[in-house]
Length: 264
Picture 1 (spheres, rainbow, N blue to C red):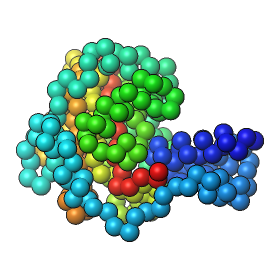
Picture 2 (cartoon, helix red, strand yellow):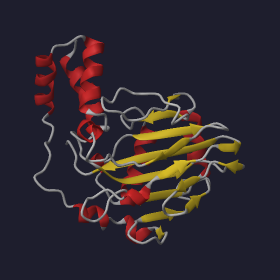
Picture 3 (cartoon, rainbow, N blue to C red):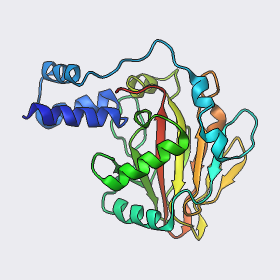
């Protein structure tokens, strides 16, 4: 086993938002390495630890709040930007993601990549280490949001065929659950969500925010972003949302989640 390649794979997974639990389990199964070998590799990566305090107000005041159009709802930050991606960019993303789809998963207490009838779409991971086009888009999104790039998880793309859906859920992790301890050990809580629709959908496929009574229809190039937390870092349960199934035509989106601290 090449130490440098192992460290690269470890670092790529860690800064991409993979939980420590899942990453160490995956690497152990793949390489059959000892705990000591993994711990030595972690030390060599010199990952940052959780800061003593997190300024959630900085996320609340991030630059997108001054750039994009605010969708006005009390105590909830949600914004949109028309034509954020061009038709060419959207079409290229759709072509690339269709080559790399896997069943979408849901979170659980052990981050076991659980496939569930609660979420029936397919997913593609768009890691910027693998593709210059992904890197350029990641930079474009980071600059527009005004957030440090390494606060972001790796971009993901989702495809919904007619009838496929993701039932109501939050993007943050509930601090009172075991899932929070698993998913937030590295990089902390999710702050903002950035979602971009890659195509128009003939019928259906809306994003529904139940508590806001807000329905967003898919439109090619439209960026939708919302803060999953309040100014003090407490989860905003009003951000519950659901992906309705398309009735005619496929639906394509990309999603990027942002965390409260970075590992590098």
